[in-house]
Length: 161
Image (tube, rainbow, N blue to C red; front, top):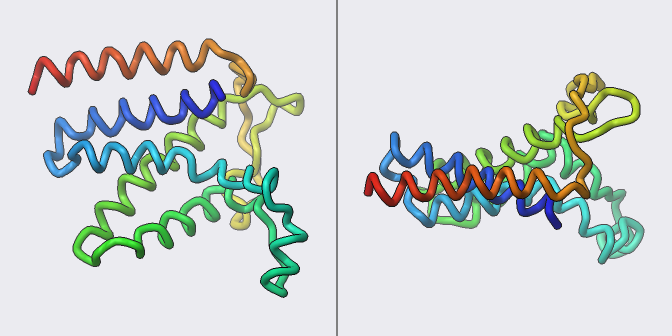
């Protein structure tokens, strides 16, 4: 749970910082960036609906795993951006992709026994970048740091607005 909170808070902070430069990033778009930070973890739906169940329902091979790679996340964002009116699609795609990017960037710092992160660019390459192994997904301190950053950004945003 602390990991999800970290993802949301960092996406909020970055979207807020970007809103200082681009006025079209309104609170609604900040919320979409925060939603985008959850997209890579949609692969956890497997805990509710197994891949085998989805395969049986659809009649085709299925896996939740690609959602946690950049390509799968961006595909989900592209599909999600089709759910809004055409004039909003570029902006919706942009802020959802921002949330996805923050999620993947933060995950590159997770502790790994191999010293390498996951193959973020799969299926383009199997390369797994090295990780500094800063924290576990169960650690609480990253959420505290993210909360402090988001709080400072919020205070600065309120003062400037």
